[in-house]
Length: 158
Image (cartoon, rainbow, N blue to C red; front, side):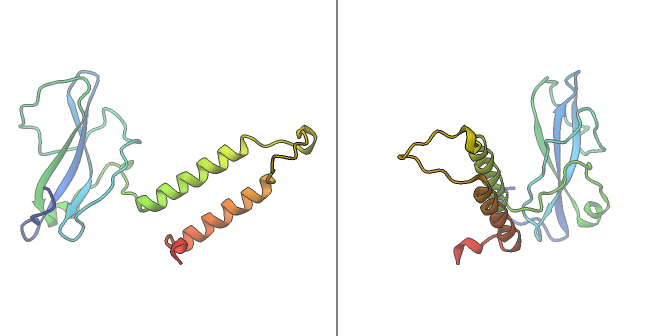
């Protein structure tokens, strides 16, 4: 499972996430799967609903009840079986790579930060040693950067 040895031919791994319910019983939720053709995935778990589990292969395991231990389970199965499984609805695989996601979050953070200092012209106190950038210029840059990022995430390299 370290990525150095592939799955046996015709096999893949179902990826499960478990967080105990209010009684400390592990509740397993199918997130998705990995295969030799798709050796990694990022699953969003922030929207998972506690207490809503799915059928899983870990029932026979003797796992102690603990009120706050999250677990990840990988079940090696036939690819045909993986294709028939349905992950929980809120565990969608992120379709945005981590660089693009980081860049979008950074843009949002910068725009929100810069906007928090916005002043109207009436509120401004003249100070010859400070420069002011109109908020609409920052907004235009923000929108242009997002548009270019959506068209080509690597545009900044050229």
